[in-house]
Image (cartoon, rainbow, N blue to C red; front, side):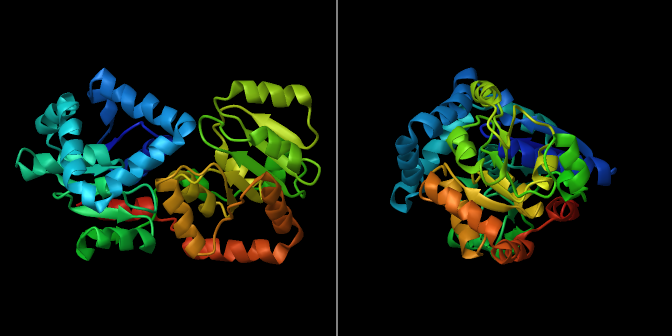
Length: 363
């Protein structure tokens, strides 16, 4: 059976979800012929630029414009116009990907982004491909662009996600609440003492991980300084090399700075709390590592709904400012019962078998 796993590199979360599914299937479904593709590699240069650089620019420098665009395309009264326009724009700019799908006509398409899912669904409706289309929604909320007639199955992160799909008139028989896929390395059992020695921190001190994605955005330096007198702080600066060098130069006590890391799961394993953004893939990794999350720099739209879903379940904190963030972190540190209660709620939320269950519907 030929399985195509497709994503769009407009955000790291879509790629990470696709990689997690691919790696699991490769190791556990030897009967499958697997291929993983970034849809944007098969679109024109301007469209690819808009999806990658354009999106990053909006959420970083023009967040109000992004908020308005998200609301406008979600607004029901405008949808009769926005959805057909989006489908037309997607298809006219993705002719190479369309030809690729028609030529390959895989048995199963697993999409972790709405762009390739929308294109594949249209090809199915026009009888140009016969693939089974499985759409993995990589957030807790559901923007209408995720919903496309011709989709055989939607993989939802939670019951909150399922509710949103039902409101979009998706039949319950086409929804499976499997959770968000993540790499199995986040399921390992770790020796915290040994890892702490490897990283160079005290194993028994309360430790906070600061990590806000590939840009290292947000007031990470201010937060690190504010917390450093009370807890150990690990700062993942990612591509923000200026921040990493600045933190190294200043030698702030109890603060360790990293650039891009390949051992995120180890940093999580030695931490008690994480200050992070509310991306879907990050949340999946965090809750499966039993970390108490504090969310900052929330992007309007999908991240707002991620936080809303977790709030309903009693998981995660959202400070109004940095001073309140410190209060929340110290409350978790100084009140073990509160920290343990959140971990109990996390235990009820986590869905560690997402990839395994996705594998089970490929037949």
